[in-house]
Image (tube, rainbow, N blue to C red; front, side):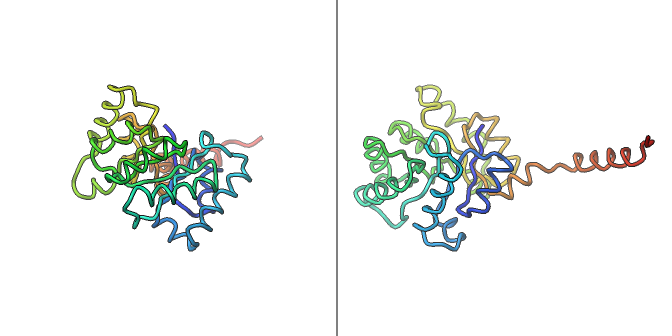
Length: 228
C-alpha cells in the first residue's frame, strides 16, 4: 500500500517524505487555504520541491491538485486542467464525480492529462473513473463514517468491481479523508492501493502504548545492566 500526504504545506510534505517515505501528495482547496498561499503559488512551490528532490515524473511522486470547485462545465474544467498540467509532469488533476466532471476527466485522459476523480461516495461513481481510464479514484472515508456508515464494505465493493472488470491497478483507489489508524488498516485489508491522510494521522499510526511501555522497560534494563 502507498501512503500519500493530504496537505499543501511544504514543511509537512518534506517532513513526511523524509520520515515516513510518503509516495505522493493530495491537495484540495481547503489545504491550499491552510497553506497561507495563493493557489498557483502553493502548487508551483510543490513542483519546485519535487525537482529539488529529483522526483520528476508522475510515476515517481504524483501530486493531485483540484480544479476550481465553482467550475460547472466540462469545457471550463478542461481549460483549467490543461493550464495546471503544464506546471508539472507530476500533477494529476482532481475533478469532482459529477456528470460534467466525468466528461471532463474522460476528455483529459484522452489528451494524456492524468486525472483523479474525487468526492466519490458510492461504488457506482467509482466505476465511471475506471471506465474513463482515470489514474486515480478517491472514495471518501471519514465523511461517511462521521455519519454512521462503516466504510470497509464500501471499499471492498469498489475493489471487487475493479477486479471483476480488469480495472484494478489501472485506476488506483485512494482512500481519502482518512482520519484514524484504524481506517488505514481497514483500507489496506480491503485492498485499496493508497491511503491519503494528514501528517497527524501518520504520526498517530506510529504510536502504541505498549511500544512506549516496552521502550521504558528496556531503557530501565539498559540503565541497570552491569557495566564493564
